[in-house]
Length: 188
Image 1 (cartoon, rainbow, N blue to C red):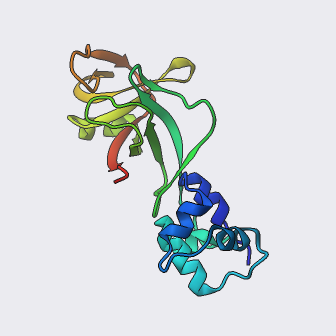
Image 2: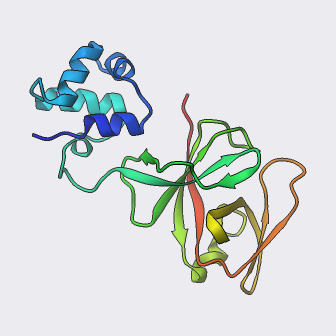
């Protein structure tokens, strides 16, 4: 059986030691490493233990075990606003839906803290009205983004209020899509 344990573990930002300690009962990092590389056979019991430690379903750890449980990171939110990530990244989700994307927060900004993941549903222009008073990610030319609360929609123009105090209202005309924040994932 070909597993995706290493791929999912790395996407979750966990080390072998983190996963070993999160297993119930705890195990060693060497054992997790052997299970990842296939030098030790992965039983159903081990697959379930590791899936619980990673916070995913066991099917997500098996190649061809269903749809991939990853959301592409579309933007990184920091003090200066939302920017495109420097390198491609994914966020592991329990069950991503078609059209979902994620935003990772690199520095605290408004109600968002460093390390947060914001899961978003992409919406076409016909659905923009349903996103009023919600936090949204709006694409800009040249791979840039705006992130903020959608406070008004006037025809094809959207008005956003950035998170945090003192932000100035931004107006965007004719965005091809927006991503509406649906879920905040915050590590405890």
